[in-house]
Length: 327
Image (cartoon, rainbow, N blue to C red):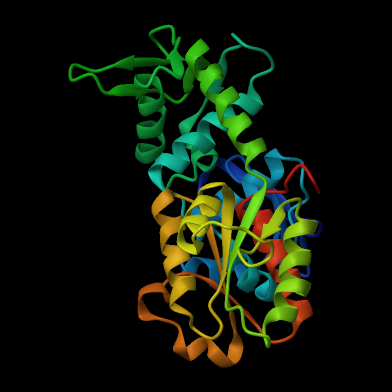
């Protein structure tokens, strides 16, 4: 099934979607392949990286990451053995609440004007919610309908409810639209996002790490379009613990560099997680084996040189949070 200028595949190398007919794609020396999957959309990957992604069970997350870049007009970098290691670090673990919000935002982006119906095809649109399968995806559609943010306007053939009220769809998908309540919610959400331009930095205040704060961490956050904030960076008269809590609440996300293993850094990161704020973890390589066991399951930016930390932190922020308005 191989031709001189292309190869045909029965299913996607990433999401494993089975194509209705074998899909022809370009390849380079049978190793690097460019594919335009109906679910993931366009990407280039090496066969070695594809096998590695499958072994690591990255399929659905990687599919959502690729689709997200495509939907936002950003060129997907080639996925090879080296880049896959970095991509794996920045693939987020979204909560169900976050997935509903992301799905509603994606539907908003697809809507040309209020009242315009959108055809959602679960088989292909799973990545819009970072869902693991069609069942999870349809749960979020149902939840948004129940919350009054979406309206099902199917004609009875495209979508209907069974005897127990479960939303059912056929291969043609779901015809939906954003309600007035949905538009109001999105407007309030946008105002909140625009107002939250601060990035709280939790780290040791030691003199040894001061250049890391003033250099790579500050620069990466600023370059990504956000305002870096560390609680000792400006004078204040508040109690330090009250100030910390207030500023974390005022932040869009938190960067926690746990080098030197300060208890306060773990507390601040834990508080941010409790609020549902994204936390980006960093640690110097020679301190990695001291990381507390409760946080070892999180991906960490492991750095040696300051320039490496700056580049990786910038990439993490852009991939997980997105670029801010100030970029």
